[in-house]
Length: 321
Image (cartoon, rainbow, N blue to C red):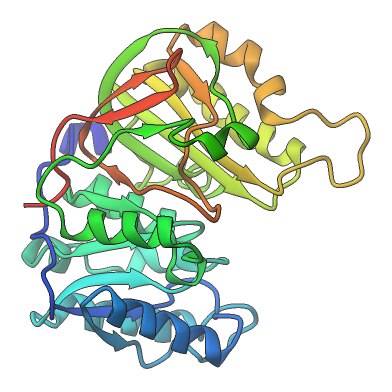
């Protein structure tokens, strides 16, 4: 099992600097339009990097950016090109999970790169962290960067050699109109960050790629899902016994996750309360990360402290070198 091969992430990529070449790829869904790809290219240029757009990002296979082999080719090309220092995902959707059996994990180990993405791309990044020890960045896909706040946080996360700023439920006066910390279980916990998108994380269970949750701070978020589905995914992790192994659980944004017309459908923070209390691990809802307009980046694989009552996630080491 993965726990026998790797107890925690031990490999870090070099922080990006101005002028570095970064690959823009779509391991999952196709971008909404060609203009979205162009906007993402300009965003990366504004960050000071040199974007290299994957050959197949505008290919079509159902909702995915081309056949599995095409999406995998773009990923492998980025991994094998030593002049490319980072890999940014353009869009989410679904399809990255299908690439894992053919992914060259040895190439990831050979030349570690800064890797950023979320949504379905969580399955790709989480598997890489589990099997190689590379610290990866759970941050917005490029097509989700739609505010100066998220832009600055993305740049800081990909270029910084110091621990990232503490993520708070409320870090500005405006946040008071949107969120507040809610702690089903109060307390302080330290552990190694794991997780990302809830649907992608739960899809990895029962596979060789499932994340190592022992002594972790499990970070979870999602978007556009039915409350009952979210409850099913979290219950799946709970029934596996792994949820009781974590040090703490940090919940980010759950954008447009609701009852989808079902009047008696409760949000995840209500349906999960009994499960979370039974684990007796500090847990907190409302942290400022996930697929929302103003979001932070969560490095996966570094030592972190969760204060559930205060609603803070403090990073205790740098994600990059």
